[in-house]
Length: 205
Image (cartoon, rainbow, N blue to C red; front, side, top):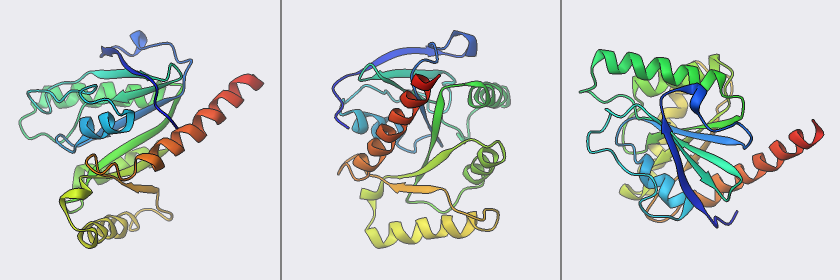
């Protein structure tokens, strides 16, 4: 897929005020400071499109971008930030669940995981919740350029081992680097395939 155009569309906290669900939509989510903004900017080849908050973990808005005038990329607020208040955490959880469960055009949730660290409880809990809710998702391991490939593979293997304690089959996994663009083609190819399927289904209707 060639990215010809990527633009910020809106930030919102109200599900009923999100853009019309006429295009396929892909949501990106992960722990605070997982490298989400860098990955999004790398995928659309537009530096600075997704901006990092000056107070990580505090922003609780759903940020929509439109790519090639054909699909939505959604930047969801990060989770797991220690300084977030209990009230903020509850607001985030309510808004997130409402969005993920009700958004009709949501095709995939891309769950970002820092490839440098061991499996985290809140990552695993969120992944299991997605599975229990029947929501399709892909695991995206970020920051692989910070480590040697052998270490990255070891850390990914640890995640797989942990997931297999509750999952019969592992979800799709893509290893990425916003520096070397590793994984970019794989993510965009997946989106391209799903876009065609989305268009085909809508045409039939």
